[in-house]
Amino acid sequence: SPTSQASERGRLAFWSEQIGATRLDQVTAETVSDTLRRLAGVSNATRNRYKARLSAVYGAAADWHWVPAGTNPARQVKQARESAGRLRYLDDAELKRFLDSCRQSKTPGFLLFVSLLLATGCRRGELRSLKWKNLDLAAGVVHFKDTKNKQPRSIPVTEPALGELREWAKVRRLSSKLVFPGVNGKQPFDFTRQFRGAVKRAGLENFRLHDLRHTCGSYLAMAGVPIRTIAEILGHKSLEMT
Image 1 (cartoon, helix red, strand yellow):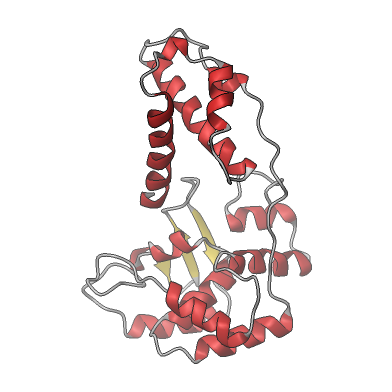
Image 2: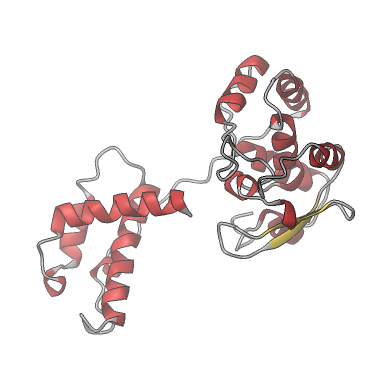
């Protein structure tokens, strides 16, 4: 995705600035470790992502026969230990306050955007890129094609989100393929400002847009839905992630 590409460019630029003048066959595990230490003020998870980018460079270099197969100093450096994933979800009272706050927004489509995040557990990027052709309103199913892990998945939409979606379809902008088009109709609308306003009005603390996905998964778990089914709904590659 464009966002991921921007992140990767930044990480590759770091390696270019630090060791870009060094021959591929002269970079050692010690070189990699010493360079990673220059990443001040970042988490272990971020440091591991930087190491992974350098590892990918050596993988490409081996494919192009620039270095012998198996030459990868980044793989010789131990992964930094990452902390447990962050989990924040809304309890019943918080959820009610938040949805009431969302209803106060004057931005068309915002309440539906939030409702779909809660109903499907999809990622923000997946919903922003959603097109009308990927919806089956009669069956109440949404087909996510542009996903983070490149694996399309289909999710049933429950009420009240389904009813709100069908009403939104009646006033859709015919000139755009997107369910949530921006001003020009070619780019999706960015609801970040509206979300922050709703969070503030609801008096929520330490709550981010991605936490709506956590909320969906947590409510499914508390309802007794099998973990494998939750993994399929959320689009996780592993049960450990779920």
